[in-house]
Image (cartoon, rainbow, N blue to C red; front, side, top):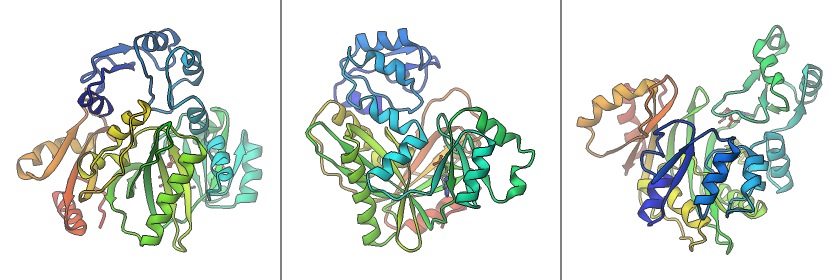
Length: 359
Ligand code: AMP
């Protein structure tokens, strides 16, 4: 999607991805097929490019550092250094004045037990690096969950970990924010998000929260963009509590699944704004043109969604062109512009394609 937006703007795109004919490779001018840690391939990419961008936090930091003096990497390596490691990210968020879940670093079982004593149940153990969509996490509710728990051992074996207190949030939300070198900071509308098995299921925009909370969420995103000297786009994931407190859950240094609604629903979408920001084009004020619901199409939804296309003239179907359909793999999404969010959610529920119902 980032490549498509770049192409509309007249840019040429080369992508590096280990899967031949990957989704981006299908629309880019060229694909280099290589691992994200392949220094030689990253050097080749740098040599052929004017500007290098990453849209994935598991890119090899050292490989990126190696080429940062040979090609422009507007997002820089510090953004990746902070956001690819949960503990560094939480420390940064606190230093920027944001509220987060209580957390402690954990390296082994003794640390874990000591951390649980301080934080208490319920809590969640997470790997510091490499986790996504709930991978590398274990929710702990009592001492019984610690006994003979192979998953905990696996998580601890990966290296640095973090224990977080469980946040009894009322709503999960997210805000996309961007910044260019001139310091222009467009902030996107607030998205209300629902997960199924820790994978984003539905985003509703604008989030159904009070104006005060809505404005506060956008202000937090703006503050983070300034504090991290952001270049490009950043996804800010939030927990909104009953008392109006907003905790920052995590940051994504790239376009984010919960921002896909912006392709149809905003004057400029998150990919346009990212491409503009890293090329130091001027950045627009973002306007929401319509209320919108975005729903993910995972492997198990593909057949149902394909079947329903003839009945849904007003649904925008996106298919990422991934070759292999797997359970819980993100294969595409559907965007529905609407005047009535509740009616649209009901329309989605009535298809019975998705097990998780949101009202
Ligand atoms: P993460 O990969 O850290 O974003 O976690 C995936 C999902 O798990 C989040 O979107 C939340 O729904 C849930 N989650 C993770 N950490 C916490 C927490 N400390 N408190 C409450 N829910 C959490």
